[in-house]
Amino acid sequence: MSRAATPFELLPGAGDSPVILHVPHSAREIPPGVRAGILLDDTALARELDHITDAHTAALADLAAEAASVKPWRFVNRLSRLVIDPERFPDAREEMLAVGMGAVYTRTTDRRPLRPADTDPQPLLRRYFHPYARAMTAAVADRLAATGRAVVLDVHSYPTARLPYELHGDGPRPPICLGTDSFHTPPELVALAREAFAGFGGTGVDSPFSGAYVPLEFYGTQQRVTALMVEIRRDTYMTEPGGAAGPGLTLLASALTALVDAVT
Image (cartoon, rainbow, N blue to C red; front, side):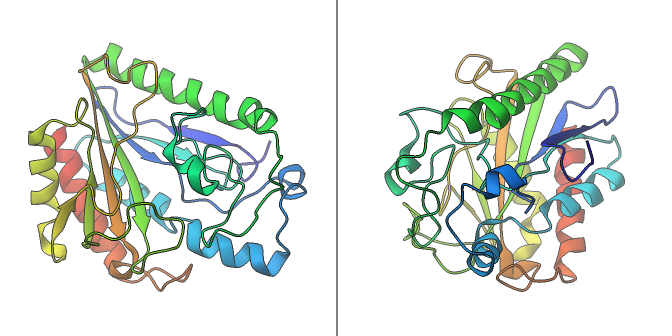
């Protein structure tokens, strides 16, 4: 299987690093069989990918990892979130089901049909979602066994202007949004992130996006697994939507490196 066709990839870091940089939404790849179930024509699909993809975040994580004093691990989704979104709950707990964007999306960012409304999500969940979840669970368990703790830093980006699918997009849209979880995000982790990203014009917490990814096996039960979502407003580093990266990418990578070093 080619790298482009590989659903996900765990890139090893140092044996004594507790940090996993999780990059779930950076890719645009859609396997042909999945593409056949999407209603959009190629032009509309390319436009949707421009809006929904966290462009260049895999490159950001790569730069940060290579510069870190103790190299973190990276878990990278190599397929588009239009295949499955690995960070959604795969059941009725997911609030984004209200806009057709659960683990398997049926609506676009502007709420148009993406897949038929009667699409059965189970085949995609079995083929892509559950293997991803098992692999990420194993990666976190490995860090726990090796270092006694695991720190998941979720690397995302978000558009400058609110998109129609956003349920909570009417709040502040700071250059850096830190998504937290009441159980898995200790205040000191938020403080370290605020310090690391202080030079980008302001950090906010849980607006416009909140939460932090933890595999369900550890969610709400294992306090040695900590997590923080780093949402970067796209105008800080790229041309929107879906355009090239600018010099801000290197600056942000340095900030992410500083956070990794501080946590490690």
